[in-house]
Image 1 (cartoon, rainbow, N blue to C red):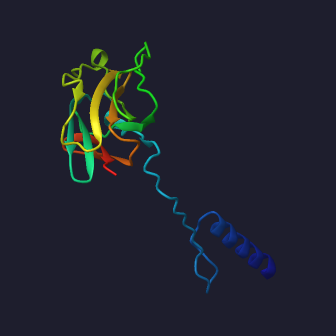
Image 2: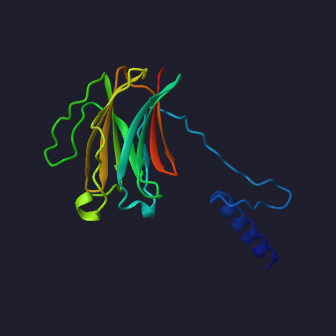
Image 3: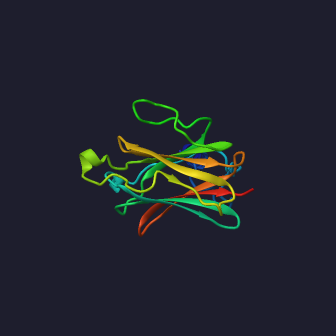
Amino acid sequence: MRMAKAAVLVTVTLLMAACGGTSAPPGHPPVTTTSAAPIDEFVPKTRTPDPGAVGIGLTNISLAASDKADRVTFQFTGTAVPGWAVHYVKQAISNTSTQAVFPVTGQSIIEVLIREAANPFESGVPAYAGPQLLSDPEAGTIGEVRYASSLRGVTQAFIGLETPQRAFRVTALTDPTRIVVEVDHK
C-alpha cells in the first residue's frame, strides 16, 4: 500500500510539473521553462477589442514627428480600447464593397484597421469629419496618412512611407482613447 501511495505521489508530481505546475518533490527546486521569441518589429500587430469598444467613433487623426520616429494617432470617443490589425501591404485596397485600389503614395504602405468602430448610420456616432489626407514636412519616414473608410465596425487608414519598410509599434492610450502607430526613422 505504501509503494502504491508513493507511486501515485511521484506520478502526480511529475504530471503537475509537465503541465506547468510549480510543485516539486521535497528537496528539489520546481522546474520552470521560459521562451523568449525574438521580436520582429515588421510583423503584423493585432489586438482584440475591449468588450465595451462597440460603438466608438473616430474623432481625430494626427501626425507628429520626433527625432527617432513618426507617430500617427487615431483618437476615439468612449473609454474602451478598440482592437486593431496593423500590417504592411503591397497595395492599398479599400475595404468598401468596391475593393478598389486606394491612392496612397510611398515606397511602402502600412494598413491600419481599427476594429469595433461605429457605423454612424446604425450607432448614432457621428462619422469622421476630419481631413482625409495628412502630411507633415517634418516627418522623416511617413509621407502621408490617408483615411479610407469606417465600415461594418472597422476604421481603415493607410500610412504611406517615403522609405522601404521600417520597424513600427502600435500602442493604446486612454483619456481620451487613442491608438498610436509609431514608425521608426531607421
